[in-house]
Image (cartoon, rainbow, N blue to C red; front, side, top):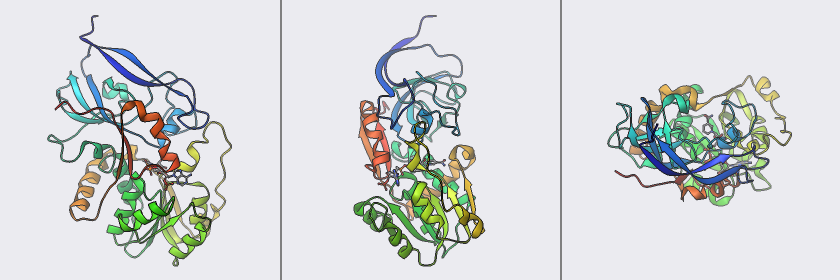
Length: 349
Ligand SMILES: NC(=O)c1ccc[n+]([C@@H]2O[C@H](COP(=O)([O-])OP(=O)(O)OC[C@H]3O[C@@H](n4cnc5c(N)ncnc54)[C@H](OP(=O)(O)O)[C@@H]3O)[C@@H](O)[C@H]2O)c1
């Protein structure tokens, strides 16, 4: 069959499992010809923003995760904000803006089936900056909202949020604050901690890169910890567990301190796990992907908080798909403030 068009598509293909981080040569960047001849139900997407997420490192490894690993030689899996360039779907006309799993590339011929995750159309006109739909009004904001739907927080409780200056943690802390909790963040470095308190409105922030970070956390949580919104795992989580109150809830969102070890290093244990028993606490892992029905309520709630002046957000925008791998390590070195996103292209409409 003759294609209707042929595009030059820049792609990142996963050529082997990463040994350390995603910049270790596992991803190959190249330009390929993409022949487009849409079948019924397919659309041609052009990625405008590529979301960089800690979970990309999990997907690239063969660690037993929540989704199958990206097959070797496939385009790297990634969440994007995209526009429809050609369409054989009535509900997704040309020009529509969508969030989809269209991957680390410029263009993608896609259907719900081929991506495995339904393509989600944004409202027309799009009511907020496009990048926010892969950040504060997208999966990161939804994750924070869903965490507290599953483990509600009460006014007056002490909530600790690790990864406090990041895309998910910054929203989680502000939701807890809006619900009347005393909120203590954990972040890397004095500048980020100051930002978390002064700009995001947390009550306190612990600099985990300082030698006395355990003392700082003890001092900031004199009445113990009722809710842990956990983004990091490892020794930070261990110390948080050691301060849980009776009946505390651990909302296990992520364990970024370990992802770069997947596939090549023995993982450290959680030494204070017995505190879940001793304090009759609960710990539950949760995944944003399992709660698609809550995405819209989450976005409505978060927009409401913004309008009340109770939610602000930060973005670290990197220009150019060609810079995605170099930028990715910011998630692990702490180079990003708020959502880390790559601007791939300007919208055509
Ligand atoms: N369960 C879900 O459905 C779901 C959905 C989205 C995200 N998540 C999880 O949420 C967490 C945050 O993800 P995000 O996308 O919002 O990323 P992010 O917080 O915007 O960026 C990651 C941040 O983690 C911190 N970090 C990296 N390595 C660390 C370490 N060894 N110890 C302590 N902090 C470290 C860095 O901040 P510092 O400068 O403070 O070190 C970095 O900025 C991740 O664990 C992710 O897997 C889960």
